[in-house]
Each structure stands twice: as structure tokens, then as C-alpha cells.
Image (tube, rainbow, N blue to C red; front, side, top):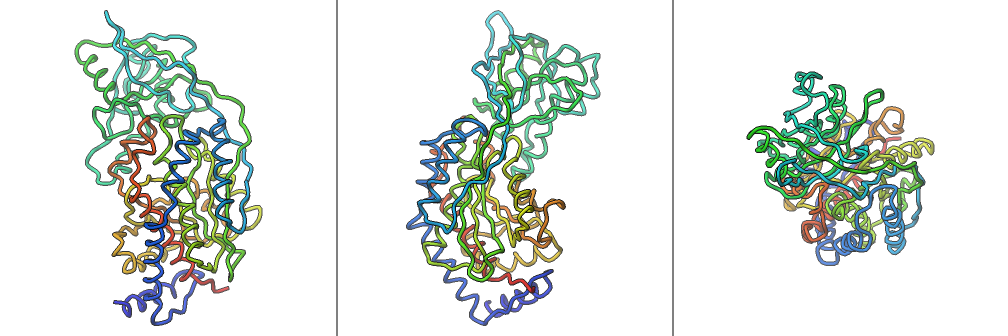
Length: 471
């Protein structure tokens, strides 16, 4: 198997734009030994679970702009300093500061009002006191347009299209209906509606907690309040509408403050051969202000820090500079990712690769590759024989991640052949916890988290070993 692997690997590398590699016959054996060492370190001496516990319990939820987010920056720098990386520093950025407020009330008006579990969607305006209106249920943005102003003016629009349970990847299900959460207020406001309520983005059909998330407005369109309903409450409202209609009382008081100064937190291990060329790995330090941001994206933060710690503990000397970035403000603006890319462009930094982990702390299944040239997917697939025993089998074209994506935008590209990868864990339970009160440390499995750390450290090692620049 090793001779076949070496031959295929050489063919792919020789055709990858801008890169080449001379492999020695026993290279795959050395790689196999190193990867086994990486997994042993993660599973026996791992620090990721304790780091995640500390982030969740000592800091808590970390909405950008908040005092908790500022505390998270301090936490991140302290952890990276303790690992004695070659460089640890803060990268300043401006971030939005939206606050939920202290009133979130919704109820179906009746002889005895029936309360509804809601969460204000991130970025929403307030109701400015209680509002009361009839509810119209729809299945999506197009139905809002079809109903028009005649049927929706002065009403509350209730988007009740559920996530489709048929796709095996739950991210596909999420992508199929999240448009109603983000753009629902815009479409409803254009037809004269005074507020929107959106079924939570989860496959749990009778879940008691609402799932928040970002929503958007459009210049020139009236801003109306927007909230998420738990699926349990969405079902309750649906039944009430079927039985003869419903009027809902709604009262929320969020506010949007001026932008504040925050930071990406960065640590580096300097490369011995190409110190000015970088392999970046990261997740986002901020979270929504519900739960503890354990899977989204405390797990990604723990993964990223631990991947570099593992390699350092094994006394691995990388060819390229290894950089961990704890990005701030992915959830409601991505100013950390945008700011990082802009500053990287200013410095003319060469990224050999960028890896993101922002899909939870579940069992890793492989990596999604955003192809920057036609050979990169095939290149990564050549690692499959080395990683098969670790149950890593997903190496396909796809999306890499929100935080690293700005690096690939034309205005920011320094290396057009940069590798862009996203860790792909098992997705079945992710939207049970996503953006809701249940996203807490106790719902992350220690071993699954550690396996994710080892998977990322292994990929960093393989890229560092096998990609050699021609020039």
C-alpha cells in the first residue's frame, strides 16, 4: 500500500500548481508513526477538554462587544502565553455590539394567554413596548411575496418552514431554510408586516428552547422586530392558527450600540525552513449570548489551540510557521475574519494553508476543501490511506469556513494556490445545540473533542511535510 500511495502522491504533487515534493520511499511509514504519536498525545495528555471547560465556565457566553468577549480575549492570550509559543499577540479590530435587552415576552392572546418561548434574533430592533397583531403563517420568502401587502399589512408573519430531515448532512438542511431567519424581516416589512417570528433552526421537532442567530435588514426598508420561536412553541402557534387564527402579543427591547474595539488572539510557532510562509488554523472566540458557546465555537477554539500544543509537545519543528488565530465576531459581522485578511494583505503575508474548525466538537470525519485550483482536492485525498484507521474518510470539495474565507477573496489573495480546509465532524447532533441554551460544556464529549484536535494536528503536519514551494 505504501508504494502505491507514494506513486500516486508524487503524481498529484507534480501537477499541483506552484508546488512539488520529492518523497523518499519510507516517508509514508514515518508519517504513520508521527500521526500515531499525535493521536496518543491528544488522547493521553490532552488539554483541550480542560481549556473548553475553562472557556465555558470561567468566561461563559461571549457576544462580541460585551464584557464577556473582552474577558475571552484575556483568557485566550493567557492560555497561549502559558504554552510558550514563539509569538503571542493581539490584533485589534472594531466589532459590533448588539445587546438582547432584559425583556423577551411573547404570548398567544386568549382567555388565558399562552406563553411562547422566544429568543430575539441578533441585530433585531425593539418593539418599543408591547405590540399586538394577528399572525399569518408562511412557509418561506416567496409565499410572503405572493400574499402581498393586502394580506400582510399590520400583521405578524410567522415563518414555519422546518429544516428538511432528509439530507444526511444537517448543514445542508440548515442551508435550505436559514434564509427565512436572515431575510425574513426584510421581505415581511416590504409587505407591511410589523414583526416576524421564525421557527428555530433545529431538527428537534418539539424542543423547548428557541435558537437565536443573526438576521439582516436592507437599506430603505423599514426595520421590524424579529424573534425565533422554539419548535415546541412553533407547533403550538401552528395548532392555534389551524383551530381558528391567533393574535400574538410581543415585547422585546434589544439595542445596537456603537462599535467597540476588540481583538483577534494569535499565537505562532516559527517555521525553520519557510518562516515567512504560514499555515493558519483557527475558530471563533465569540459566541451568542445564550448557553456557553461550547460547540459553537468553544470546541473550535479548543481544537485550534490543542493542535499546535500537540505538535510542540512532540518537539516537532515545522517547515512553515504555524499560526493559531482565535477570531472575534464571526457570529454577527465576521469582523475578525475580515480584519485578519485585510491586515494579512497589508503585510503581504503568504498563507500556504488555512484551516477552520467551526462545526462543533463531535467525532471528526475528515475535511472539506475549498478548491483554489483544480488539483487541490486530489492532493488532499492522497492522505486518505494514512488517516483511514482514524475513521477520517471525508475529503471532498466544499466550504472551508466563515473566518478564513476572506483570505480567499480576490482583493486579499497573496497566494492564489492557498489550501483552504474546514474540519468536518459528524453533523447529526450539531443543530440540537446550535445558538441555544443547551450549547453548554456538559454537552461536549471529551473523547470526541480530543479526536478532533488530533485530526487537525495531523492535517497540519501532513501539509507542512508534503507541500514544498517551487520558488
